[in-house]
Length: 232
Image 1 (spheres, rainbow, N blue to C red):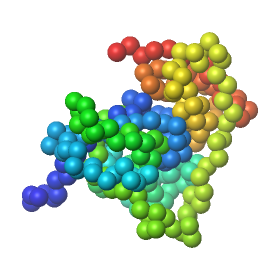
Image 2: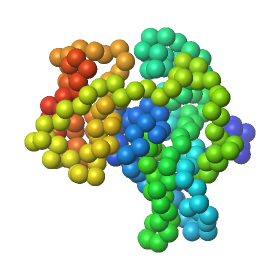
Image 3: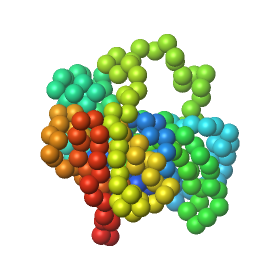
Image 4: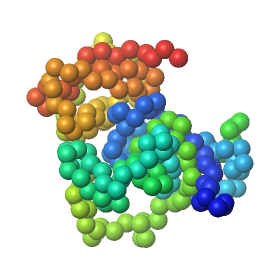
């Protein structure tokens, strides 16, 4: 700690299929088929530090919105869930534009890989994090303490339904690794467009698993128009 505040050191970084923010699910767990790995920094790369973690099915990740830091914060924000045109207080939202830019996600722990050159690696699913996001802490999800079925959800009382039907022509889908196809369909079905954009002639693009995915949305159906690899 210094005179300017508290220093938080990343203990790990996440490796996901998202190299840009567009298309990332707006909450963790909405697309359970999304896979990611948590890679510890050398100073925290100890198998004994994760001893017993495999007994838990879910984890809390505390992380930093690293790409939002330079943009500062605002006392009010416009949540996508409210259509992007209604303001609420930043502390009544999960906006990245917060005073300390901290994020909180609940993910499923698929397995703990203890051996290998990178030390223990946590394989998780359902993460809503950009590739390379710094992880500040990891805690086990404890159902009896962390689950509150009677809790009120404010303007987000339940998970959004998959809003769109998804059509991916076979000529394009074959370019997507087979183990990534369910996740891609889940992402597209959640409607990654900004809530204020509904032009049926507009072509959108998101980057996933090293691929550019281009699509249009017409009458409740998302149609993939092109898929091509991103040059390294």
